Length: 318
Image 1 (tube, rainbow, N blue to C red):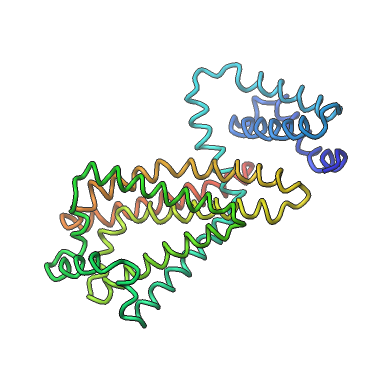
Image 2: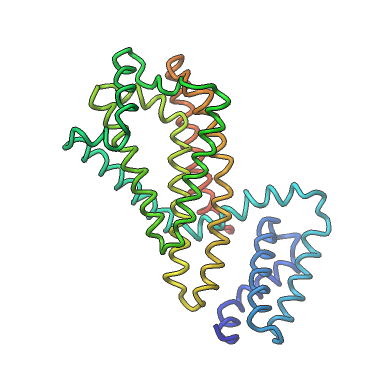
């Protein structure tokens, strides 16, 4: 990008940031922190492409002023930790909002493929889930405990194995985005089809509602975060395919930073999902109210953090 175009695109923003720094008492600390992040990003770009320019000197001076104004009174690194989850993640999610939406659509469509295929092809469920798993589940259904499969194995071993596997699936959905987003679409497709067939199996035997009280204890977090990881992968593909006025490398580097920020934020949710599946799901029959409450709280948490908060963050003056 030419320097003049870079300045024209960002000049108004820089003037607003400069004014905010001069009047920081009247500006929310979160907005000041956001301004600093914007400045450092622009400074890094200017250093790379306009190293001897007045634009770089101006941004460097403004960044130093911002750093001194915001961080000189910082008491601990814990502030950075909370700032990451409170500000950087919502900002990245809002930037990635359309890719997250497309990921949701792909996954939902894949689930429908799984359901419809299982409905019209009697052997489809066994093809997707395997004979051993299906036979065991049928026996559990006949015994009156359709989700008994979650009782198998030790709680701690189950928690660790499940968490590692979930993170692996999410990482693949993210990393495969480098193949122009097609790889991410494939991961979403196969997981969505599997989940659709899985649910239809319980529907066939008339125990879907009972099984869902168990599955969605951990599934609310697990499935939601796989979709989010898919959105991160699609963002990588977008960076390569649609660089706009940036070079493909610049666009990819910027998008991978945002996608990586979002993906890192999902790790705690995967840990919680693994804990729920390893320790709580196996006890789903003890209380349907508890099962539904956990599912509801999980969904509300995801909706608030990955939808409501980013929208709110995008409108700081409202």
